[in-house]
Length: 383
Image (tube, rainbow, N blue to C red):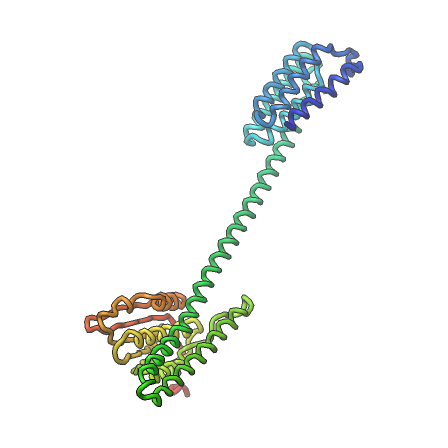
């Protein structure tokens, strides 16, 4: 549409100039109207089809220019159309093809002009034709390079935007999993305690109401702890992104955890091997949450007490929780979000966890978390 309008406008202007008495400079002759009209049609067709068929359009206008030159009718509109078609071809074709075709066109026109003018190989008009074609090719090549550069920049920007969106979605998904895991770790243990104590209170409330007091006190303490833990989680979630959003729990809180479990009837035998030392924050939090979840499951699904073993090795910490569990609770032992959360905790700390039942109906949770090498001497050996 645009090229057609441009071709029609150029044809109208050229024919208007011809009808106004245009005389060819240097020759003093006026072009014939029929010849000018034929040249105008060839030029208009080439310009109108230059974007859809750039190579055929250039060949058509080149052939028309050669024919009119051989017949002794030089038409300026054909030269204008030739430069425009050459530029379009060079801006759209492959670089090598553009220069080969452009060179062939320039050479053909140069030879025809030399033969028709008879002014020798250095005729200004012949050299001028070569210069015009060469400039059109160079300008078209530069335009093509600029388009390719802009397209590459836009493609990179698009890929970067997609990468940012994917990264944002990934971070949102990770944050949702982290929040779900943290809420489970914080709430599940204490809700289990509340559930057990509520059942105990309901059992003795009618016959021995005086024994319901301790159970209700445990429920109140557990509820207060849940409220504080949730407030801690909500508080860290409101902190800026560059501030750590993990609650500061660790193995230092194991004693309080064991006391609470003992108050609700779970006896835990604790064993420690090796010298306790300060752990990295991620490993410390993962160790605490794994112990908390495993002992909570032992309280809910197990029968009897549990054994907690913590081994401090030079480059790792090994945590093992065992408890007797009846066969009818097999599916409960290995399912649920608690086990998933423990695996995620261990993976986040670079470790691994195994969960399963032994032949003697002992359910075992074993976590191995890597630690930095402990190269320091024990305190009692230092001078």
